Length: 270
Image (cartoon, rainbow, N blue to C red; front, top):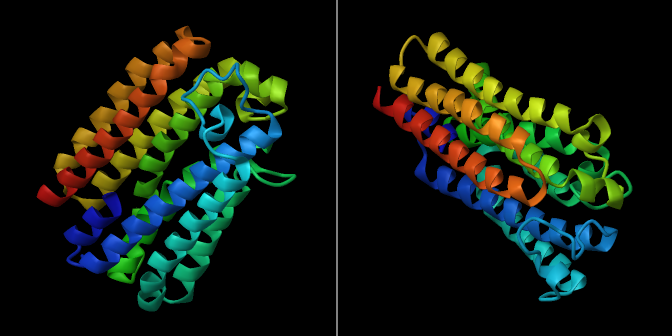
């Protein structure tokens, strides 16, 4: 949404490329979630004590092998969707797509799985932020101003906040399963602080984009969303433990959606 808004404002919108980028991004996310479902179960991170939403493999609805096949199909469909973008943008787009798929697989699979080594937060920030926004802009405009990458840190930071809230909620379960997230490594108070920092980064990225553009004042609405979201949700996360923290994830996702929507509309309309 945000990458397309930037391209639109620069007179570089390309509808087919935007649609293919959307399809590829959604399919990579689906594939990552399917792989995560299978691998967390196989590693023992998903048990009867799970406090989050139900997982298909853990509930016995699908076998781990079946879920891995579904993940492979989703990643394959994402690659197929991206072929149009490779034709348009060349080898950099191919490299970016393959890196995104590889990160989706490596998120919970392998000896050094990202989610089990404390690296997931960084990868979510990068791939849900500058890569997603910058990549969507590039396949339309066939150019990539650095300011677009900086602005992309906004949604990337809020996507990271969702992960951090998840890890704060699951810290005890993850510790027992050997899932060494940053919250497990550095403690729950660190996780709550990192969660708040994500909103500050989103606020700062928005302000930077507005100031450097010399216009698009309507995007200030997104800065307000990030600021208010952090002020309301960080204290709520600090007070909540275990299953009581579960609603914070949905509320954080709602802030991300509202942030992206107000940023995009504010940018295009002003």
